[in-house]
Every structure is written in structure tokens, then in C-alpha cells.
Length: 335
Image (cartoon, rainbow, N blue to C red; front, side):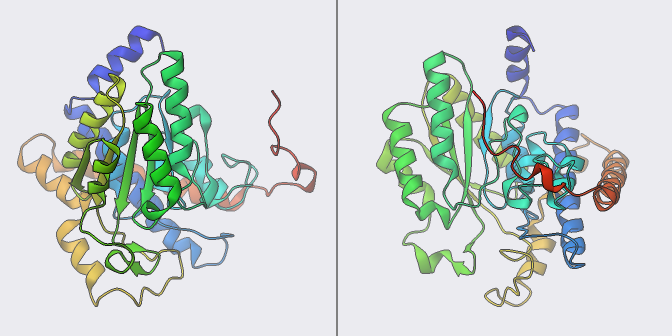
């Protein structure tokens, strides 16, 4: 894209016209169906390694990525499928990667926890808890030194928020006024530990005060609330206003990892959340009741996404595995 095209695209990101709303719904539906299908397929034993599902948190990824362009960057977590899809990573390539196949985004060498696509601005999912914030500080410094208006966003869980890397990164970003947004996806549990057992205080966002940056709490089930908060923080960062901390309070539908019995959760906890706070349900209710989008238009997206996921799984199962001669390729970068 030319500089004028990039500038125009960024100006349009603040608007939620019908096309933007349909794109947001498609993103959330794609993430949900991708994760729900992985939940089913993982039980067959055909998928190697660990899988951590993002279902229930789709509004966060969709709300933030709606404001980003291809030259902006994000750093994800071990629960990274949603961020990857929302940032534009190829769904079929991701499915191949998770199945450990040669045609995957990382040639089948990374799997679920290490999906990355630098061409799309995805620095990677990360098996290191709290590993993303230092990476986006590097991106932010690069943008500031080169004089671009790029931004970088790190996503971290409530458990990861207690890591020293996160505090150090927030301090650095604040001291250097870096165009960085720190997003805490607070789904209530660090693995199997409720937040109240591991940290004092109600809002993680209040920690922003210690680093002289804005701290905002937002309902992570509400796409529109996330989109608004994200837009303000990203605009501020692009204009040289420095970093922000946004805590999205949300719930995950599945265990910390596939196979987690979730004995630490209350009876019917997830069922009640699905009935009352599901982000896709809330989105549909809002846009259809306001007369912005017809139910049939959303139903059409549902069908298209279902077909896409079916194709992705079929192709992944049929694809060849990496051959031994590729074991040491893609290990080092040539400068």
C-alpha cells in the first residue's frame, strides 16, 4: 500500500459501518468455529502437542485488530489462535500448522503455541508466559526511531500480568514514550488459579498508575466496548502519546489446555456464561435489533465459515508431514 492508502485505511478503522460490522462478525465467527472444531478434533488424538483454546474471548481480538494495518505488530500468548486469525493469518495454514504438517504457516515446526507470520504482523504465539511485552517494546522503539506511526500490541493473561517481564516492559515503554498497548486478557484463571489467590486488588489496569500511563478496564465480552477502548489507545499511540494498559475482563469456555478437567470452576459456570455473556450472541442482538444488519446476512457468514473450517481440517488431515531433511531448516536467520 502507498502512504496515502495506509493513512486512509487508518482513518477508516475508527468507523463501524456495515462492512466493518460484517468483517468483525466474520472474524469472531471464524475464531469460534476454528476453536470449537479443534476441541472436537483434539479428542481424536491426531493433533500433536498442547492446544489452548481462545473460545469466549473473540471480541477482544476482533476489537483490537479492527484498528490495525499490515505494518502494525502484535505479540500473542500460548492461547494465540484468535489473535492470529484476527490479524489476518491464513486459516488453512494455521490448521496445517496445528496438525504439524509441512504446509503449515511455520512448516509444521511450531504447532499451536508458536504460530507466527511476520508478513501479517504476527510476531508469534508464545509458550513463555509474559514473553510478548518485551517484543512489542522492540517494535515500538523501531517505529519511534524510524519515525513511522506504527503501533505494537501485546496480549497477556491475568497470570502473565504478574511476571517481571510485563512490569519491566511497561516501565520501559513509559520512559521512552513507545507506541505500545499492553492488553491483559483477564479470564479469571491463571491455569487453574483464580486471580484472587494470586494477586491483591480488583483491577490489574490500576497498575498503569505506577507507570504514568492510562489504565482502562473493559468488558471483554462486548465487541463495541473493546473496539472503542482499543481505538482510543491506538490513536494515542500513533500520535506520540505513549503506551496504554487495557484490561479486558472475559471468560474462556474451555480449560487452560485441552484435557483440563476444570475442577476448579463452579458448577454450570461456563453454561451460564454462554447463555448470558457470549460475545457472538451479544453482537448479533445489538446489530439486528438496531436494524444495521439482517439475521440472514449473519447466517450466510456462519455457513461460509463452517465450510472454510471443514475444508481446513480435511486438507490438514490429508497433507504430508515434514520430511527428515527439513529438520534443521528455518532454524537460523541469514542477514
